[in-house]
Amino acid sequence: MEDWKKSLDRYLTTEPSSDFDDWCEKVIDKFSFAFWNSQEVWIDEYDGQCNKWLNKLYQKQYEPQKAAEIIEKAFKIYV
Image (cartoon, rainbow, N blue to C red):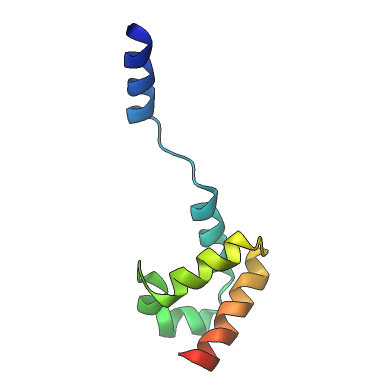
């Protein structure tokens, strides 16, 4: 009976690890300075187009540098 209490305690006190979040931070770091400064609000929208593109590129296992380049080019074409 005590095992579930230990598990629950560990779950509630341990910060979850998210590879996606780490990957997104790396992608955002690779954006050009000009793009980041001009589109910061668009990039930070939780349910926005940038987040959708990030999800698709993560699922396809793109490297952060390549993903950043794709997003910047797609932004110029579609947004």
